[in-house]
Length: 359
Length: 126
Image (tube, each protein chain N blue to C red):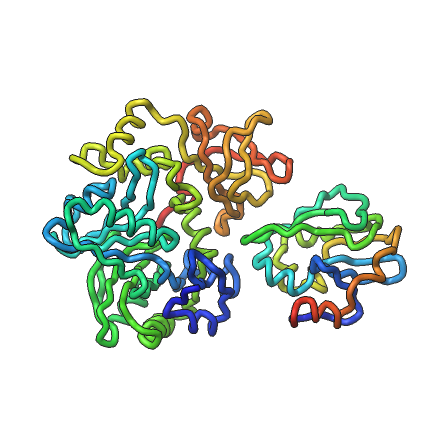
């Protein structure tokens, strides 16, 4: 199993380590709920170094990125970030990702840990423009600083004011090491993601500097990362999206630029659009006391109409929240459905995303 | 990790405290730690009896759900309803205020086969 450069500090902080996508990762430190609330109310630090980083360089970098992703990367200017996805020819999703533009000839694609090998193979296989592709996933440490206090921490550590719009980035230095400071995250809070190449000493040094830069700065694990993203209704690859789902039914129509000249999956997605969606990823708020989880059936009048792709009890709402692919007739807000848990039905209602207000 | 003496332990990481014909049942410190944040206790409020080896409810935690198995047969005297509002008590005080149900034992057979604290300590490698 792979260890991140922050492994030792995670263990020292009392993390419960689990195998995630081939990496030993912290699922929680003290408490998932406490870590979740710390991010909503103050700040939390996440080791997300398992995420993959692929650099695309050369004269044809933009052509390649625009061909392999579904959003329009030509709209990016240097210093901007874009949420996007890669699709197969049939419109199924290879992965969702972030696209960073450094210059016309340099892009960074940030991909999911569980998909690094598959994604990189896919990129190499479809590199019809001959761009230079570098899988730098093993080199990078990634610390996500998330929560209302995150800006103060980052400014203190880099010793300068950092005024970044959402989905933009800048570069800074920490102890002589270059750091990509990105105003992005997976929590819905004000937050930054710090990418850098550094050994254990530099990595834990930056972590400790962030801890020392504020009051009560808590480490947060993948458990709270999941409940935070679900409160916002963000998709998780492997749960809510995968090769059997297309971006239009997953609610990712806003990143699917069908007017773009040519990209992998375009024809299939145009067909999906012209034929109309059959099902949609639908947010459900659970009225009864229960704990909705991935894989549970959704039913109407005793007939199963779908399965939950994600579910949890929202620490903020203290109610069950879930996502499920449902046939269009059941997707209007206000529609009542049942979640089946151990053969018992629990009432739920279709709502709109996000489950909680984005700040 | 706490493993108090004087209790009996099951391989499913439950404890039972027997006083005469009355017994209290809960989950061990090891179990609560493995489950992590407990969100609620799912035991039918109308549960009247439990029978040895059968499931009598579930514990819902953020990470996963744990099934509760009856260590012996008995009539339910009380379900710990204070846990409805404070399920985290199971995490913080699993052998005390975090007890789950109180029963009157109707069939004590099997209790003698449960582990004592020393044996349970060995099972969880503490």
